[in-house]
Length: 344
Image (cartoon, rainbow, N blue to C red):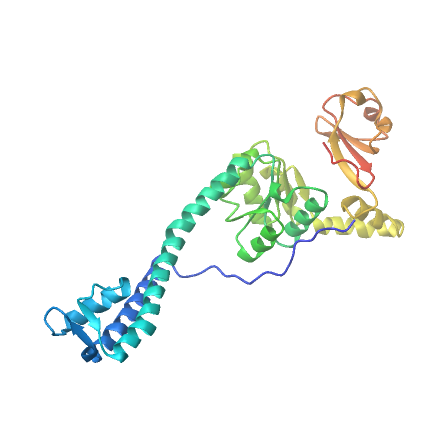
Protein backbone atom coordinates (compact mmCIF):
# COMPACT_ATOMS: atom_id res chain seq x y z
CA UNK A 1 0.00 0.00 0.00
CA UNK A 2 1.45 3.33 -1.00
CA UNK A 3 1.82 5.87 1.74
CA UNK A 4 0.31 9.34 1.27
CA UNK A 5 3.00 11.88 1.81
CA UNK A 6 2.82 15.44 3.02
CA UNK A 7 3.91 17.61 0.06
CA UNK A 8 7.20 19.42 0.56
CA UNK A 9 6.66 22.06 -2.13
CA UNK A 10 5.17 25.23 -0.75
CA UNK A 11 5.51 28.89 -1.50
CA UNK A 12 8.05 30.44 0.82
CA UNK A 13 6.35 32.73 3.31
CA UNK A 14 7.83 34.89 6.01
CA UNK A 15 6.06 36.51 8.89
CA UNK A 16 5.95 40.25 8.33
CA UNK A 17 8.13 42.29 10.65
CA UNK A 18 6.02 45.40 9.98
CA UNK A 19 3.51 46.22 12.71
CA UNK A 20 -0.16 46.83 11.77
CA UNK A 21 0.18 50.53 12.56
CA UNK A 22 3.16 50.89 10.23
CA UNK A 23 1.20 49.10 7.52
CA UNK A 24 -1.72 51.51 8.00
CA UNK A 25 0.69 54.47 7.88
CA UNK A 26 2.14 53.25 4.57
CA UNK A 27 -1.37 52.98 3.10
CA UNK A 28 -2.28 56.47 4.26
CA UNK A 29 0.98 57.79 2.82
CA UNK A 30 0.19 56.11 -0.52
CA UNK A 31 -3.27 57.74 -0.63
CA UNK A 32 -1.85 61.15 0.29
CA UNK A 33 0.89 60.79 -2.32
CA UNK A 34 -1.62 60.02 -5.07
CA UNK A 35 -3.79 62.92 -3.93
CA UNK A 36 -0.82 65.31 -3.90
CA UNK A 37 0.11 64.23 -7.42
CA UNK A 38 -3.42 64.94 -8.68
CA UNK A 39 -3.52 68.31 -6.89
CA UNK A 40 -0.19 69.33 -8.44
CA UNK A 41 -1.30 68.44 -11.94
CA UNK A 42 -4.65 70.25 -11.58
CA UNK A 43 -2.91 73.33 -10.24
CA UNK A 44 -0.44 73.54 -13.11
CA UNK A 45 -3.25 72.89 -15.58
CA UNK A 46 -5.84 75.06 -13.80
CA UNK A 47 -6.58 76.88 -17.04
CA UNK A 48 -8.25 73.71 -18.22
CA UNK A 49 -10.81 73.91 -15.37
CA UNK A 50 -13.85 76.14 -15.08
CA UNK A 51 -15.60 77.23 -11.87
CA UNK A 52 -19.31 77.70 -12.63
CA UNK A 53 -19.70 79.65 -9.41
CA UNK A 54 -17.29 82.59 -9.77
CA UNK A 55 -15.17 81.76 -12.86
CA UNK A 56 -12.04 81.83 -10.69
CA UNK A 57 -9.90 78.77 -9.87
CA UNK A 58 -8.04 79.18 -6.58
CA UNK A 59 -5.71 76.70 -4.91
CA UNK A 60 -8.54 75.89 -2.46
CA UNK A 61 -10.74 75.14 -5.47
CA UNK A 62 -8.04 72.78 -6.77
CA UNK A 63 -7.91 70.92 -3.45
CA UNK A 64 -11.73 70.73 -3.36
CA UNK A 65 -12.05 69.60 -6.99
CA UNK A 66 -9.33 66.95 -6.65
CA UNK A 67 -10.84 65.51 -3.47
CA UNK A 68 -14.32 65.38 -4.99
CA UNK A 69 -13.00 63.85 -8.21
CA UNK A 70 -11.09 61.10 -6.38
CA UNK A 71 -13.79 60.22 -3.85
CA UNK A 72 -16.95 60.82 -5.93
CA UNK A 73 -17.99 61.62 -9.48
CA UNK A 74 -18.11 65.38 -8.76
CA UNK A 75 -20.95 67.90 -8.34
CA UNK A 76 -20.53 69.86 -11.60
CA UNK A 77 -19.61 73.17 -9.94
CA UNK A 78 -16.01 72.82 -11.18
CA UNK A 79 -15.49 70.92 -14.43
CA UNK A 80 -12.59 70.16 -16.77
CA UNK A 81 -12.98 71.95 -20.09
CA UNK A 82 -9.67 71.45 -21.89
CA UNK A 83 -8.80 68.16 -23.65
CA UNK A 84 -5.74 67.75 -21.43
CA UNK A 85 -7.70 68.18 -18.19
CA UNK A 86 -10.39 65.78 -19.36
CA UNK A 87 -7.84 63.16 -20.42
CA UNK A 88 -6.07 63.48 -17.07
CA UNK A 89 -9.32 62.96 -15.17
CA UNK A 90 -10.30 60.02 -17.38
CA UNK A 91 -6.95 58.20 -17.54
CA UNK A 92 -5.32 59.18 -14.24
CA UNK A 93 -7.87 60.38 -11.69
CA UNK A 94 -10.30 57.52 -12.35
CA UNK A 95 -7.62 54.80 -11.81
CA UNK A 96 -6.48 56.72 -8.69
CA UNK A 97 -10.09 56.63 -7.42
CA UNK A 98 -10.25 52.86 -7.96
CA UNK A 99 -6.83 52.33 -6.36
CA UNK A 100 -7.75 54.39 -3.28
CA UNK A 101 -10.97 52.39 -2.86
CA UNK A 102 -9.00 49.14 -3.10
CA UNK A 103 -6.54 50.40 -0.46
CA UNK A 104 -9.39 51.15 1.94
CA UNK A 105 -11.11 47.84 1.22
CA UNK A 106 -7.83 45.96 1.71
CA UNK A 107 -7.18 47.72 4.99
CA UNK A 108 -10.69 46.95 6.20
CA UNK A 109 -10.32 43.30 5.22
CA UNK A 110 -6.88 42.85 6.78
CA UNK A 111 -7.54 44.56 10.09
CA UNK A 112 -11.26 43.97 10.65
CA UNK A 113 -12.96 41.42 8.42
CA UNK A 114 -10.13 38.87 8.20
CA UNK A 115 -9.48 38.87 11.93
CA UNK A 116 -13.19 38.53 12.66
CA UNK A 117 -13.45 35.69 10.14
CA UNK A 118 -10.36 33.94 11.53
CA UNK A 119 -11.71 34.15 15.10
CA UNK A 120 -15.10 32.81 14.02
CA UNK A 121 -13.54 29.97 12.02
CA UNK A 122 -11.23 29.05 14.89
CA UNK A 123 -14.19 28.97 17.27
CA UNK A 124 -16.06 26.60 14.94
CA UNK A 125 -13.06 24.27 14.67
CA UNK A 126 -12.58 24.33 18.44
CA UNK A 127 -16.20 23.29 18.99
CA UNK A 128 -15.62 20.15 16.95
CA UNK A 129 -12.24 19.26 18.47
CA UNK A 130 -12.58 16.17 20.62
CA UNK A 131 -10.64 12.91 20.75
CA UNK A 132 -8.13 14.52 18.40
CA UNK A 133 -4.34 14.19 18.15
CA UNK A 134 -2.20 17.23 18.94
CA UNK A 135 1.29 17.33 17.42
CA UNK A 136 3.62 19.92 18.93
CA UNK A 137 6.40 20.50 16.41
CA UNK A 138 6.34 19.76 12.69
CA UNK A 139 9.96 19.17 11.87
CA UNK A 140 11.28 15.91 10.41
CA UNK A 141 10.08 13.74 13.29
CA UNK A 142 6.72 15.44 13.69
CA UNK A 143 5.95 15.33 9.96
CA UNK A 144 6.97 11.67 9.77
CA UNK A 145 4.63 10.92 12.67
CA UNK A 146 1.75 12.69 10.91
CA UNK A 147 2.56 10.83 7.68
CA UNK A 148 2.38 7.53 9.52
CA UNK A 149 -0.86 8.41 11.28
CA UNK A 150 -2.52 9.37 7.99
CA UNK A 151 -1.20 6.21 6.33
CA UNK A 152 -2.72 4.15 9.15
CA UNK A 153 -6.13 5.65 8.47
CA UNK A 154 -6.28 8.63 10.82
CA UNK A 155 -8.42 11.42 9.40
CA UNK A 156 -6.15 14.49 8.93
CA UNK A 157 -9.03 16.64 10.21
CA UNK A 158 -8.52 14.90 13.58
CA UNK A 159 -4.89 16.08 13.78
CA UNK A 160 -3.91 19.52 15.11
CA UNK A 161 -0.35 20.69 14.44
CA UNK A 162 1.19 23.44 16.57
CA UNK A 163 4.39 25.11 15.39
CA UNK A 164 5.93 28.55 15.17
CA UNK A 165 7.16 28.03 11.60
CA UNK A 166 4.63 29.18 8.99
CA UNK A 167 6.42 27.21 6.26
CA UNK A 168 6.11 23.97 8.22
CA UNK A 169 2.45 24.66 8.95
CA UNK A 170 1.80 25.19 5.25
CA UNK A 171 2.86 21.58 4.62
CA UNK A 172 0.69 20.33 7.48
CA UNK A 173 -2.29 22.33 6.23
CA UNK A 174 -1.86 20.93 2.71
CA UNK A 175 -2.09 17.45 4.22
CA UNK A 176 -5.51 18.36 5.62
CA UNK A 177 -4.50 18.94 9.24
CA UNK A 178 -5.72 21.74 11.47
CA UNK A 179 -2.83 24.10 12.21
CA UNK A 180 -2.10 26.76 14.78
CA UNK A 181 0.83 29.16 14.78
CA UNK A 182 1.96 29.37 18.37
CA UNK A 183 4.24 28.33 21.20
CA UNK A 184 3.14 24.99 22.64
CA UNK A 185 4.84 25.81 25.95
CA UNK A 186 2.18 28.47 26.62
CA UNK A 187 -1.05 27.64 28.42
CA UNK A 188 -3.19 29.67 26.01
CA UNK A 189 -1.84 27.83 22.96
CA UNK A 190 -2.73 24.44 24.40
CA UNK A 191 -6.10 25.78 25.54
CA UNK A 192 -6.74 26.89 21.96
CA UNK A 193 -6.18 23.34 20.64
CA UNK A 194 -8.41 21.92 23.41
CA UNK A 195 -5.68 19.78 24.94
CA UNK A 196 -8.07 18.69 27.70
CA UNK A 197 -10.26 16.94 25.10
CA UNK A 198 -7.40 15.45 23.05
CA UNK A 199 -6.87 11.75 22.46
CA UNK A 200 -3.12 12.11 22.74
CA UNK A 201 -0.28 14.62 22.49
CA UNK A 202 2.86 14.02 20.42
CA UNK A 203 5.75 16.29 21.40
CA UNK A 204 8.52 16.65 18.82
CA UNK A 205 9.82 20.20 19.06
CA UNK A 206 13.42 19.30 18.22
CA UNK A 207 14.83 20.44 21.58
CA UNK A 208 14.70 18.34 24.73
CA UNK A 209 14.24 21.29 27.07
CA UNK A 210 11.38 22.72 24.99
CA UNK A 211 9.72 19.31 24.64
CA UNK A 212 9.88 18.72 28.39
CA UNK A 213 8.39 22.16 29.06
CA UNK A 214 5.56 21.42 26.60
CA UNK A 215 4.96 18.16 28.44
CA UNK A 216 4.84 19.91 31.82
CA UNK A 217 2.39 22.50 30.51
CA UNK A 218 0.15 19.89 28.89
CA UNK A 219 0.17 17.66 31.97
CA UNK A 220 -0.85 20.64 34.09
CA UNK A 221 -3.77 21.46 31.79
CA UNK A 222 -4.82 17.88 30.97
CA UNK A 223 -3.85 15.42 33.71
CA UNK A 224 -5.29 12.42 31.85
CA UNK A 225 -4.12 12.98 28.27
CA UNK A 226 -1.53 10.43 27.05
CA UNK A 227 1.71 12.16 26.07
CA UNK A 228 4.43 10.79 23.78
CA UNK A 229 7.69 12.69 23.59
CA UNK A 230 10.86 12.50 21.51
CA UNK A 231 14.11 13.24 23.31
CA UNK A 232 17.68 13.13 22.04
CA UNK A 233 19.82 12.81 25.19
CA UNK A 234 19.69 9.70 27.39
CA UNK A 235 19.89 11.74 30.59
CA UNK A 236 16.69 13.58 29.62
CA UNK A 237 14.54 10.44 29.62
CA UNK A 238 13.96 10.60 33.38
CA UNK A 239 13.06 14.33 33.40
CA UNK A 240 10.68 13.69 30.51
CA UNK A 241 8.87 10.98 32.45
CA UNK A 242 8.89 13.13 35.59
CA UNK A 243 7.27 15.91 33.54
CA UNK A 244 4.36 13.59 32.81
CA UNK A 245 5.21 11.81 29.55
CA UNK A 246 3.65 8.37 29.20
CA UNK A 247 5.94 7.33 26.36
CA UNK A 248 9.50 8.53 25.94
CA UNK A 249 11.23 7.71 22.66
CA UNK A 250 14.93 8.16 22.09
CA UNK A 251 15.64 7.72 18.36
CA UNK A 252 19.37 7.44 19.01
CA UNK A 253 18.87 4.58 21.46
CA UNK A 254 16.42 2.89 19.10
CA UNK A 255 18.95 3.07 16.29
CA UNK A 256 21.48 1.47 18.62
CA UNK A 257 19.04 -1.35 19.36
CA UNK A 258 18.57 -1.95 15.65
CA UNK A 259 22.32 -2.06 15.13
CA UNK A 260 22.75 -4.47 18.01
CA UNK A 261 19.95 -6.65 16.68
CA UNK A 262 21.58 -6.78 13.27
CA UNK A 263 24.56 -8.52 14.87
CA UNK A 264 22.34 -11.50 15.78
CA UNK A 265 21.06 -11.83 12.23
CA UNK A 266 20.49 -9.85 9.07
CA UNK A 267 16.69 -9.98 9.35
CA UNK A 268 16.15 -8.85 12.95
CA UNK A 269 16.43 -5.12 12.26
CA UNK A 270 14.30 -5.51 9.14
CA UNK A 271 11.53 -7.20 11.15
CA UNK A 272 11.63 -4.53 13.85
CA UNK A 273 11.21 -1.81 11.21
CA UNK A 274 8.29 -3.81 9.76
CA UNK A 275 6.61 -3.76 13.15
CA UNK A 276 7.03 0.01 13.51
CA UNK A 277 5.84 1.07 10.05
CA UNK A 278 2.48 0.82 8.32
CA UNK A 279 4.36 -0.18 5.18
CA UNK A 280 5.67 -3.30 6.90
CA UNK A 281 4.33 -6.81 6.30
CA UNK A 282 3.32 -7.01 9.96
CA UNK A 283 2.10 -4.35 12.39
CA UNK A 284 2.10 -3.82 16.12
CA UNK A 285 -1.30 -2.94 17.55
CA UNK A 286 -2.52 -2.06 21.04
CA UNK A 287 -6.08 -2.50 22.28
CA UNK A 288 -8.17 -3.25 25.33
CA UNK A 289 -9.30 -6.78 26.08
CA UNK A 290 -12.82 -7.62 24.88
CA UNK A 291 -15.48 -9.22 27.14
CA UNK A 292 -15.39 -12.52 25.24
CA UNK A 293 -11.62 -12.79 25.76
CA UNK A 294 -11.72 -12.49 29.57
CA UNK A 295 -10.48 -15.68 31.19
CA UNK A 296 -8.79 -16.93 28.03
CA UNK A 297 -5.01 -17.09 27.58
CA UNK A 298 -3.27 -14.45 25.51
CA UNK A 299 -2.38 -17.10 22.95
CA UNK A 300 -6.10 -17.69 22.22
CA UNK A 301 -6.92 -14.24 20.86
CA UNK A 302 -8.18 -14.36 17.27
CA UNK A 303 -7.23 -10.88 16.07
CA UNK A 304 -3.48 -11.36 15.97
CA UNK A 305 -0.44 -12.77 17.73
CA UNK A 306 -0.45 -11.58 21.33
CA UNK A 307 3.02 -10.70 22.59
CA UNK A 308 2.38 -8.72 25.78
CA UNK A 309 -0.31 -7.54 28.16
CA UNK A 310 -0.36 -4.58 30.49
CA UNK A 311 -2.16 -5.14 33.78
CA UNK A 312 -2.40 -2.26 36.22
CA UNK A 313 0.35 -0.55 34.26
CA UNK A 314 2.75 -3.49 34.56
CA UNK A 315 3.97 -5.37 31.44
CA UNK A 316 3.67 -9.16 31.20
CA UNK A 317 5.08 -11.20 28.31
CA UNK A 318 3.20 -13.97 26.53
CA UNK A 319 5.43 -16.47 28.31
CA UNK A 320 4.54 -15.27 31.83
CA UNK A 321 1.87 -16.77 34.05
CA UNK A 322 -0.21 -13.56 33.99
CA UNK A 323 -0.81 -14.14 30.27
CA UNK A 324 -2.58 -17.47 30.92
CA UNK A 325 -5.86 -15.74 31.82
CA UNK A 326 -6.87 -12.32 30.53
CA UNK A 327 -8.62 -10.02 33.00
CA UNK A 328 -10.87 -6.98 32.58
CA UNK A 329 -8.95 -3.73 32.01
CA UNK A 330 -6.00 -5.60 30.48
CA UNK A 331 -4.33 -3.92 27.50
CA UNK A 332 -3.14 -6.26 24.75
CA UNK A 333 -0.17 -5.63 22.48
CA UNK A 334 -0.38 -7.88 19.44
CA UNK A 335 1.15 -8.39 16.02
CA UNK A 336 -1.48 -8.11 13.29
CA UNK A 337 -1.56 -8.48 9.54
CA UNK A 338 -1.73 -5.44 7.21
CA UNK A 339 -5.26 -4.15 6.80
CA UNK A 340 -6.40 -5.39 10.19
CA UNK A 341 -8.93 -3.17 12.01
CA UNK A 342 -7.44 -0.29 13.97
CA UNK A 343 -6.68 -0.83 17.64
CA UNK A 344 -9.56 -0.06 19.98
